[in-house]
Length: 296
Length: 283
Image (cartoon, rainbow over the protein chains, first blue to last red):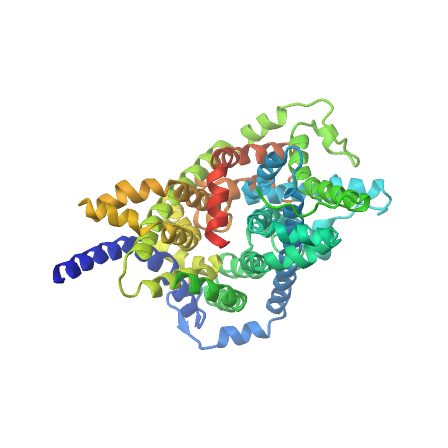
């Protein structure tokens, strides 16, 4: 018995040793820097200065009375809500349609992932061209159908710029949502659908009363994951608008980037980062709770 | 085979479905088509208010110009090196750790797992604020090695989680049987577990590769020399900006920049799709 125990202990020591490299990488590259940034948030620290100087909550107080920062909070909220909701609707509709037998379905499904594979700078270039103010195809279409008299310079307009970056992000993520919903549809009880059909249910009824309740949990997970991703979005927005015009598309990531790597004010940038982190945590906690349950 | 859902034969339903299908397929595919069409057009067909939908006299001059006017091939190589390297590191670290967490009992493993899962909430830009001075101190600023190491930040926590749920479903009997045969723990890992987990490992490798390949934030800040730039900042600094008027060249460069990832993905798609959805959604 004792031998068996010591054998098991040796095995578990081996198991623990397997986790050490990842733990070290995690501590050095992720957790350490994150903690240091959290610490910097309470300091005045320019990359050019020698030592961080402790100033308590001064960075936060300064930020909460800075209209520019408060605007970036709003901009982030608009961007995250719009992208998350539209992507979820598009992805779900697309999955339901691609769920039916049609010619070339498997090819279409595979090819639909293309937006997701393209480098995000390519996505940004692509949509900048489509929304181009002089020669863009959207303007050509609007002019052709007489929906506008003059070409619209989308990217230099507050609403137009937000619309452009939102479209690009929705385009990028719709395929992923489609995949998740298709996977969730696999376990849909066919008998229930058939029974409802016999009772005279139409497509809309089936979606409303059978499909949506069935994939509700998946949709919840998708929306939280999407929201977490959208809260972190940097690449496409920075490439398309650099956060502009003026501040119209300055989300948190761009706010932090500007303060940290254009003004080299690491203290204030960290304070923005902490407020940003708390916003993400607020969205993520229900999701993480369910993951923890799974892990235990 | 998924169960059928939208089976109504009513003409209104059929028409509605067809219209939505065409709109969504158009939304997803037209931009890619337009990128290709623009890349094949001469400038006098690009810079018009009402461009024709198809390139009437396709040319490849844009591709040559994009290659000669920018360091595109260099950017692509740098991206492949950093994304490939970090994908290899991330997958190796995550596989070992996930297997350890899933199949061995040692104290603190739940705390550590949960901690890493929670780390997915840390904004990358916030980590970067402190990673930057660290890289500077280590002399890794403006090096491909530094960028490769930094990319581990992106995918390590989700990779551990995806592989953890894969290894948790791996039957314990397989490992027990190998133990009874006298195999050491290391042999079991090498000869039994790793071969079985190839599809999951590939999917995680592709996942972390894509993260690094798509990056703009870290590459823009951690690397500043033009010959070390990766594809994201490379395209951004060459083809964006107020002076940029060469949309034909930009679209040609965009196509060439996309090809490597598209090819890799086309081959590994099968593994990837299964791995991604099974790791995150429990049916």
